[in-house]
Length: 155
Image (cartoon, rainbow, N blue to C red; front, side, top):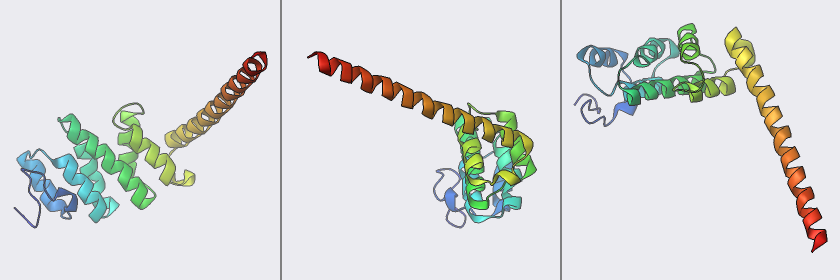
């Protein structure tokens, strides 16, 4: 056990604050690298953690790979921006998979002016889709209300 974290059980890895320790664990092939990269995200600078998040996004274990994308979302929340490597990794994964929530967090917490072109396009797409969904729901509710009113008058 090293400074309060245990790579075997995963205990304490969310407190990991040493990028060198993560690198050593990566070289050893430890299994909880995705969990640990979330800890790094909370305790290190974006420049320090970004390359490690990108590496963790390539892990063979799907669960740990998912945690790496969670770390990318947290990085967007905490920093209000991402590195070009993280933007590229999220774009490469695309919406609909592991990156879905991380892309959403990026669109929510990174100002539009700081987003690269693909993310600006994605932001516009999401805004239009959300507005169309809202209009659709309003029309459905209106039809349902009208139907209930018509049925109520027949009784």
